[in-house]
Image (cartoon, rainbow, N blue to C red):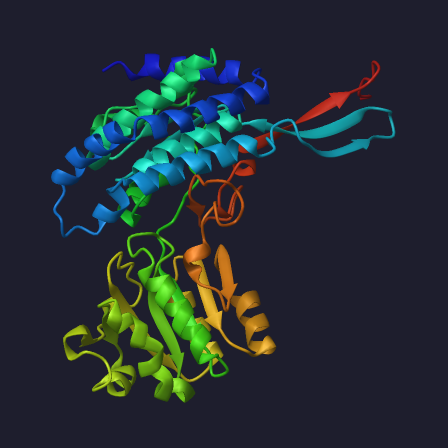
Length: 416
């Protein structure tokens, strides 16, 4: 397949988008949202074909599955993005030099954003909404597991662009084969940035093989530390929600860390997890505290490999520690720097944890399930960046822009 012509068309469409008024871009998103609602039966049929080809036991099924409710939520998120204030054109700073020239720092679109993702059809709509709102063209390489779902969604999104007289090449869905990934990662001169969204293997592959700049969204190896001064009822709610709300997402809890002084409360803390049939891999001390109080068929001795694992399943590691410092050391050793939480009533412990933990999102008495662009008020998200350059945490509209300097004067020249 001739990929260069696709990338060239996307680049030309991106150039035109930068000159398109925000009202028109917003209308295209609203039209796309309505098309998703109107064509829900067709989307479900396409998604059913993808689900039928995936083993029912795969934890990716939940990410792949569309329902009427999920489609309605995707459409609602798209409409929410359409009403947000566009960041492009925003003046970030302005100053005048002694020679009279004025320098303005202004937000501008990247131009063409490449996206590589796994079995997540909702990402197809999210990245479309965020890119179009910020006047970026998008080239998406979706996972083969979601090819029917992505194809059906992409057709509607391109129809929405045409309805507003916008070049449909502003959104391009590449074929699902590996050849397309290699082409996208090597599209120097056409694609300004590539963002991977998926598991650790995908992210590592993109980082190691891309010839264009990469914004790395990381796998989520997520911890919650139940402090000596933690409130039990808050802890029960936070831990259960973080683990069981949706086990297949990157903000789901993977390891519960418990202070030795609260081991007597561990059975109560884990009680809701038993009701959700969560398998617990406990260290020796935690195992002893849970034995006889947690279903035997769901309780296992932890191996070292369980700490630092993103389970994406109804599984949880439990680690006991003698102090906050020990909890911080365990997190530093195993964290992916995505989301970390503490449950405590101690202001001192909360402050130390918040200051010391190296993560994109740090929570105090709050479930890590809130690491999400929509929950942060961004309307949707491109992904959760775990790197420290350009963007960190949930990536919304501003993170899909860069900036340029505009220098204005009256004939000034630089002296030798």
